[in-house]
Amino acid sequence: PTIAVDRPGLPAPPAPPGEGAVLYFVANSSLTPVLRPTRTHLSLKQTLALLLDGPDGDERAANLTSEVPTGLGPVTVAVDASGNVDVVVSADVTTLSTTAVDQIVCTVRDAMPTAAPITLTSGATAREPRTCPVAG
Image 1 (spheres, helix red, strand yellow):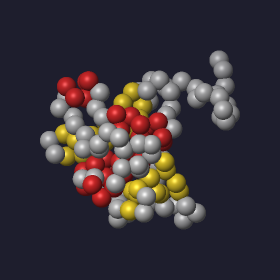
Image 2 (image 1 turned 30 degrees about the horizontal axis):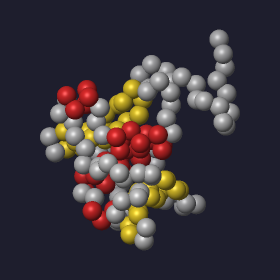
Image 3 (image 1 turned 90 degrees about the horizontal axis):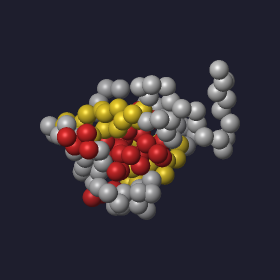
Image 4 (image 1 turned 90 degrees about the vertical axis):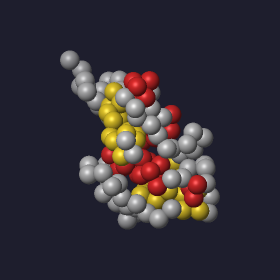
């Protein structure tokens, strides 16, 4: 057997069975966490890229949708010394629905994980800091 060692620059070891990224999509007007199986542990940026891509075929077949618009990336995430989280997107955050904001906030919360409020910003515009409305 091999021993996994965290070394920067090397690919992550394969994820254990059942590992994946928790993405928040919409089912019957409610936020719904979905475990998207992955072969390796994903970074926060990779997890957000999956969210931005929207539901896959199986998820769409299960009537899951997304209010997060395509073209929202690239996305960057910054955490300040106080632990506040800022998610910077390329699209105008004032045009995002509350559900879209919550999808991003909940996905970030579960991927980090953090209990801090999360702020979405674009350029000089920011949404109010939010916490995920779904228990996690």
